[in-house]
Amino acid sequence: MSGDGQGRSHWFDDEAGPVVRPYAMTRGRTTSAAQHRLDLIAVVVTEHDAGDPETDPTLSPEHVDIVGLCRDEPQSVAELAAELDLPIGVVRVLIGDLVHAELVHVSRPVPPAELPDESILRDVINGLRAL
Image (cartoon, helix red, strand yellow):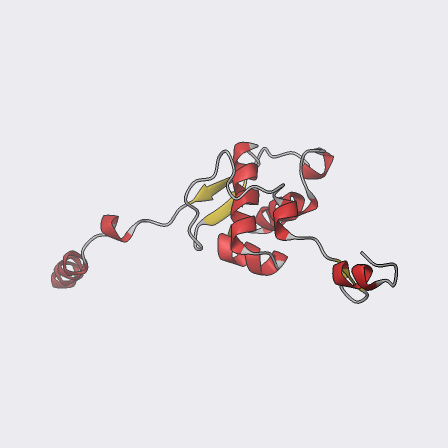
């Protein structure tokens, strides 16, 4: 780096503050120990008995933010990524950490293969109408 401040401008924006690379938030990980396949529409809910995440020194500010957002109301993975302005891959790793720490749980959507066939639902509706 040169002494003219050019190196500083590469890593610092006066309006935005210091730049933190996404992999720094996950400590270079692309998956977590407890990470499952997290769909964008999977819903994250804070556990009822989850304590105050701010007192846990192993959690990053982003972990704490996720727990707080999901405590107010359940959030999808996509909503969390948008709210935190983080890449979806980073949010998935952070959620996996929180699942492993038992601070949140994830409700996954029902796979399309397990949904009832539309024709069966129409037959049920027609049968109910016939009553």
